[in-house]
Length: 286
Image (tube, rainbow, N blue to C red):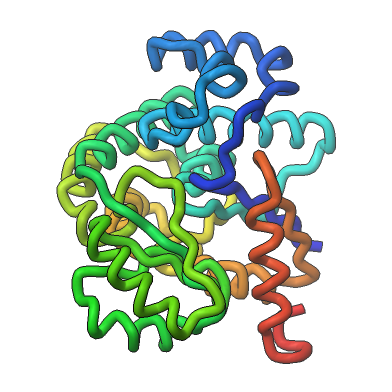
């Protein structure tokens, strides 16, 4: 069996997440509070929904809850995964699990990433249900200011851009798709609009030494395992590139006897995995 741990990103956050984890790891919670300048436990348990949905807070809270959840699962099960992957922000939890950095260094990187993305300005994203990537790209030829941000499942594609551009594209996409659902996000993530944020985050990454990975991590940008020599550049590029989740999961499903386990709040990735499996050719990636 090949054990794979998967970590969700923004969209999986919810009030109350981490409730059972914070009392078990008080030393890490205190260190997170000192770095952030606020109580991560109070943010996750008591903050208003709009604050928790602010990317500056969403990313840090998901990283902490994901990292603590990983530590707790390994401690309880005694099993270290053979592979890891994470969706967008979740990739930083996967890299913590793989030994690229310690808990606090990862949180510091995530905080800088979140702040840079917030400074990029407002934007919008929408999930397109029922169209393939090629069909979405065909529609977007009439909406050149909108990018594909997430390839979540064969017929679940997320688009990203300015609010007006995404609304216009959503109306056109809605004439062909089963549904077009606006996402509760504060920016045009994984699009060209994150170029300035990527530059700023690249400067932050250049000040840190990322350790060689002890566990293979499948990259959002390539859907293949990260290499140590390109890790920093791929993390920078992730901000302006689509999350290739369908390809990533298919790569993992081709491993010997894969067992994919979601670690973190909710079951968003588990649902996507089911859709990807169902769309695969019979016998190809089961």
